Length: 179
Image (cartoon, rainbow, N blue to C red; front, side, top):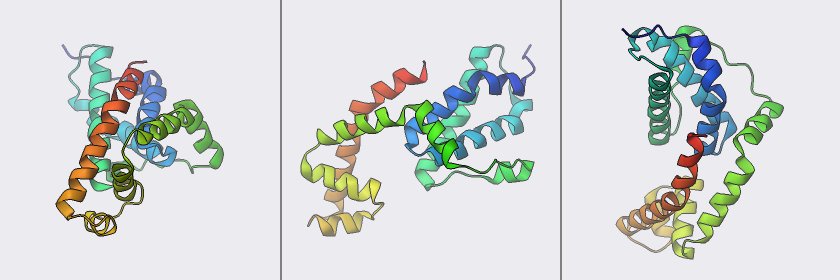
């Protein structure tokens, strides 16, 4: 028989790890807080549908919600806040001290250093394409024009660069999720 989901216990067990999960994947404390709060809002909203039998099932369920929200954020460029508003949950104002604390707890300085080292392994042309597309959020057409490439070639260059970065960074990030 499925256990009743204790939201308070779920929060206590996973609040730190889940916040680290988002902070390390977004490299932005404010976005991490948005996704973190949205994950718990979705858990509250969906608690009656939870059919797990153990804390391990609970963690898998919660992180599945988190992964889906992160993927939606990455696809759309923003975190959905409708459920939070519908539930009337208000996030406390984000202070500079809170942002610094989230960054410290998530080890963001180390992550930024790892990303810088990973970027340094890319060729200058690939690094420039990734920089323009991901960091500067420029369109592929703009990247192509700036680098004197076709748009297809710009897309391929960015894709290869991101795959190379993922190959370097993903094993490190994945090992930290389980810690």
